[in-house]
Amino acid sequence: MISIITIAKNEEKTIERTILSVINQSAINKIEYIVIDGKSNDNTLKIIKKYKNKISKIISETDFGIYNAFNKGIKAASGEYILFLNSGDELFCPNSIENILPELNCDLVFGDIIIKDKKGQKSTIEYDNLDDLELFYKSLPHPSSFIKRKCFYEIGLYDETKKIMSDWQWFLKYFNSGGKYKHITTPVSIFYLGGISSSKNYKKLRKQERKDIINNNYSKRKQLLYKIILKITKRKTIIKQIKKLLIRVGILEIYENYLEN
Image 1 (tube, rainbow, N blue to C red):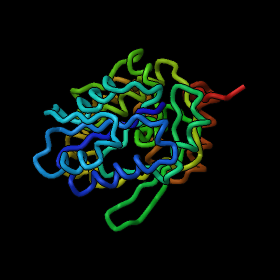
Image 2: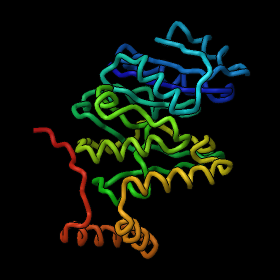
Image 3: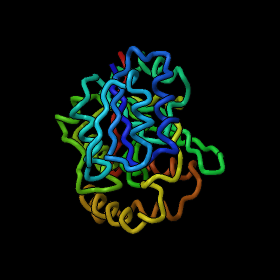
Image 4: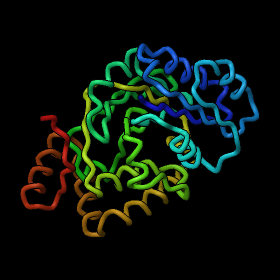
């Protein structure tokens, strides 16, 4: 069973798109769908209740930010795996969950994600083998990351003092604890730009949270090295060559992938 958690607050324009992408899944009998509403004062809750017969749990109450709502969803979930699909985002196709089920044999399994802007233009974020340089400048996409529920109780829930980047902080904590992963080279979901994580209004806060997380996870020496590498390299092929050198001399840590025997 997969618990899909959608959080929303005043999202009357986008919430239906997300709900329909979940309840129309071919593997709907393998899904526990939980919707967390932050006490919306528009028509969001009305739209959610329109589909109440197809939603496993609806919680509508005041929250204290995105990650407070995430943690509520985790505590309410009973599935083996958890996927966070926020309001406005959607699963890539009606068979997304059916296709991923045979691949769920690791604590963290994630696929690629499609990014769509307001003009409808698309791009895809793809991942190579993960290392601490790659996670230094980007997080895993939580709308296409399936995390075993037990991991949140072994490693900890999301840090609610962070308002934008707590999911990135959690992934760093997961890998630093020795967590393994499996990457599926297929799109799982579509992420629409324009939410709080990509909003210009939160640029200052995002920058401060990023600085705090980096300081807690990377030494000053490593921060300087990685910043220099990212500044002088523009092409993936050059970065890969530098990574090979850093691995050879023992500077760059490679996070272990999961290979099924």
